[in-house]
Length: 259
Image (cartoon, rainbow, N blue to C red; front, side):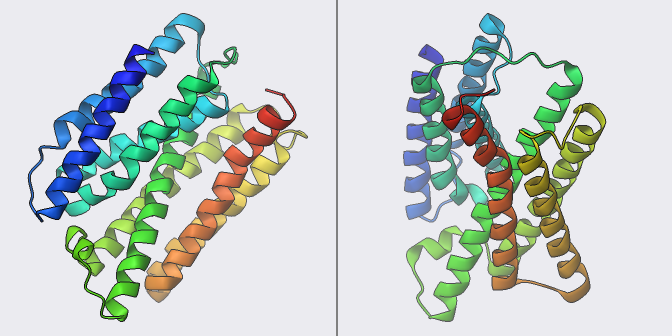
């Protein structure tokens, strides 16, 4: 619990400092040290629990791990460019997910060999990366909407130029697509029955999300899809992915009480 409380404090400090930097339209990285400490302590909270009781990938633990991945990706990308604005949203989300994990209590660990752990690792990285893509898509939509209406809000200066933001969105989607492909491949290779009763919804929705992201990348390459079209496809694919993993886990674990 100590790791959790200190991590939450550092997430709050990093967010506050980042808001101050963005208001001044500056390029200082004063927010980066507390953000890095928060991410490290977030990871330490999970590692401490794993050493004590084993690997926990139940609903709130998985949710917290995705938040950890999002915060880590934001800290890395934000340190090198104007995408630090993403941290204003991501750091509070990561803190909330960590707090839920701490308050909900830890469940008995799942017996997973290294192959299923690899599959789970790819899945969590894919969800974190594509969740960042979904946030970038929302930012792109808000930016386009404001510019189209000639509403030059102050927060627009904190974002990259429209073309750069769009490029970053598709690069993030491409990275997430590779990770999602690895998730599905390791699932086929290592999961005994992907179409078992408790896995069929997760499998079908994951494949549909993979096909949607793939179609979006193909449409970008062949037809130059961009703007609102890209935003809609990204959010639709992410919605399928959220339903596939967290929707299935919520129903199984929180409603039906099954692992």
